[in-house]
Image 1 (tube, rainbow, N blue to C red):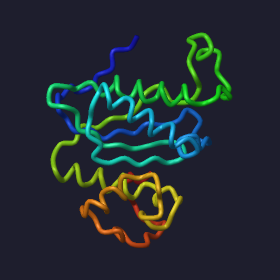
Image 2: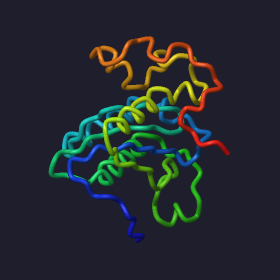
Image 3: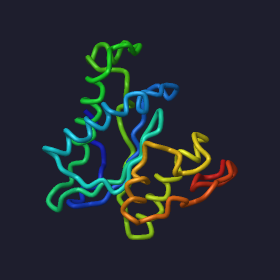
Image 4: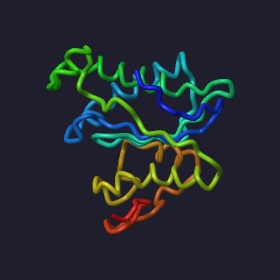
Length: 178
């Protein structure tokens, strides 16, 4: 088994991107209740704070803060992915490798993580979570996307409901140019 180099920072704040294996699928929004339950069940035994969360049809972004004595985000993601997969009927096509390993064909095996460095970095990544549905052309306004912690943050008075207003499709949104 590979030995991935991951930073171990107990109590750290992390930005994640987690993606479906088949990016043409819309499983995450089609089965949003199953995803929410997988997250809630995982938080019962492996607590973490959700600073931001956005679910798109084929991937999600999240910002979590782990407990002070804990740096194990990998177990949390494994549990969330496993619980979500078990809630779905077995309809996906499997490669020979996944069949041999007894794996489902729902998630990409890994995820991307980034340790949040400071308040500016934190704000940039929260904004990225908020704007992501607009960036992918799913809605014109952040407030129109239902699967986002943006709505929780509006209710808490952290951001206005018209944050970012109507956004044109031509923004850079933090992406690197080719």
